[in-house]
Image 1 (cartoon, rainbow, N blue to C red):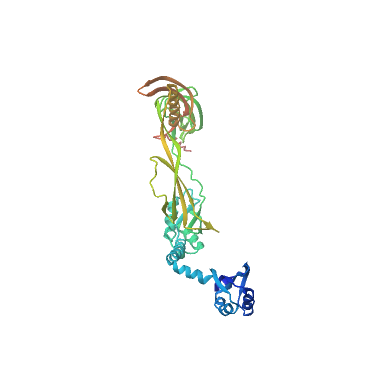
Image 2 (cartoon, rainbow, N blue to C red):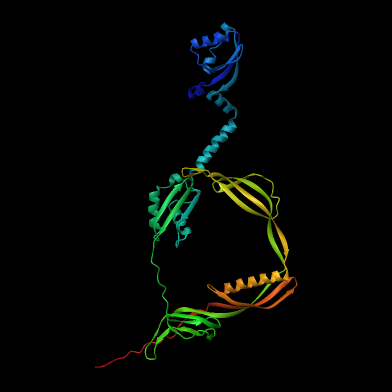
Length: 404
């Protein structure tokens, strides 16, 4: 079998030759220099072969001499493809416009992403990048080389050491390296550490200042725990008191829980919606009917083809909607009571702050009325009770003048 680019470009046909002298016909055609290939017998008095278009029109004298007849079975090659394309001009124009649109869309920036920021906000970086032309909808041809863009961004952002600009397809990635500035120490004035709540001292560890209370001592709100005034009566100095003071604090929490609980459950029914994504826009292509669910959860998956760092602006999106229903569950009094205690415990720990722990809890009262369970609980919590209080009127050490 012979088939090459030249034969396809010039165009060829597959013909069936019928006649008692078809073998003589083939020999004469070869002697005349006609290009014939892929010859095969299809009957006792017939054969089939491929022949170029220009040589096909030279067969008539040979057929008249041998008494054979020919029939065209198939037409292949560029001339026939072009003729079919003319008959379908709408499809050809649509394909051409699609390719032009795809090229145009891939020539614009559709996504700008900022990476590596810690103290600096990404919005600030994007605002500066927009000043030099890096923004959504920008034409890539008008952008400068990445090295020039990096230098301009670095000069416009004094907070950074370096900004890398990477252009991949329709996406620009700005990699920011911020300057490592030493953390500035927090300057605090003279202060006491006082109790923010009534409590019994469990632990007191002064780091700076002088302790004013002892372990197991009961303290009132506002009482000085670690004094910021150090020294004796003759020589005193005010400092910023530091330390850890943990105390036992008491709370009474009231919680209520309804016996009928509402829950959300998936039914297993779902429907997919397909979207054609072009840049930042999505066009729904199937299905067009409304969702049959009144309540649902949605999940989205996108497919944006890419190759060698190039990401196409045209892609596909599938959104899956899963039906959900509200269900009712009837709790027993004991289950509702346990749930109320759990809610109260979480609320107390949230109010007590970081590193707080419940030492003891006791249910004072529990009733069930009007479809709800009401619980009153007493909690004993160990928490940090120290709070800062500035020292007003800092005592000064008296100066001693000596005359000799």
